[in-house]
Length: 353
Image (cartoon, rainbow, N blue to C red; front, side):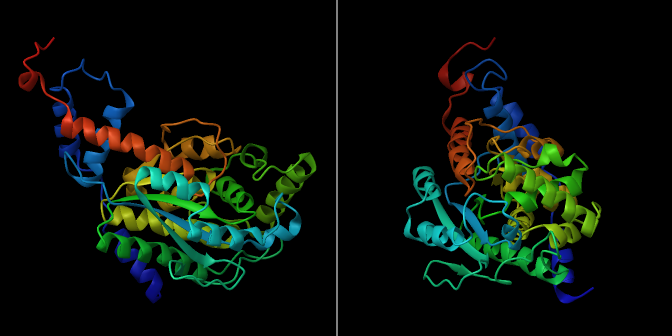
């Protein structure tokens, strides 16, 4: 076991199950509030989950960040995206300038956007950019491995390191976002490898490819899986063979947050596949995950089902970047405020049924 593998193993050993006593306390407290038991539905479930993750009845989640991992993909050479690869660095600069959808929605949610270059195929420089480039884009997974296992470990570590720094700054609520032209193709390949579902069920239109582009994507995923034969029991091997650097980075965000007992709001298809790979690496990490929405990308519902998660929103979105996760933060705020501001029957002088 090399140094990176040992560091990851040590980190995984710090991830434990939810605090069931805190869950029970939250559920009991909710039943003392001025409402019929269970009448706030998923908000009550969410309040209990937050208690279980943090161990606190009323966690302070006011400091929050959307971590946007960015990386490029060699598989774009196969014509799997409706947009050219140069859009990746252009959008990274848009994030840093505050002009993208995620910036707008994060501002509304009171969240910081933290953009990490873990594998963009361009030289980028900006005072707010987190420079953690492992390599300038992945290999073309239809012809070669996306990256080496060591590179996958480096990208996972980049995600953990970002969480550690933000946690030290007081952040207690994390959300996952990504940017990488072509990244629905490796995500679909990973989903098939990890779950065994059919290629047709996993591969969608991504940025909006036409029927010919969809057929190319499905063919590319089949070829990649035939070439690499990734082993579902080895999630790091899966992401190295057919994944992406930003996907591995998001695995690190999930694992880092779980090791800190912080909730992680996962966004769309790519983020959910990254979370699935993280959970396959460390099943205990599942307890920190909150599913924000179900996107229109073809395989997202299957990825959520594999994690056993029910999303809070269904808004027909398919942008990524962390946009759905930022919107779900408002529901997290609502659940927290119910716990901290709503009167009990005794306080309000209301007769309990």
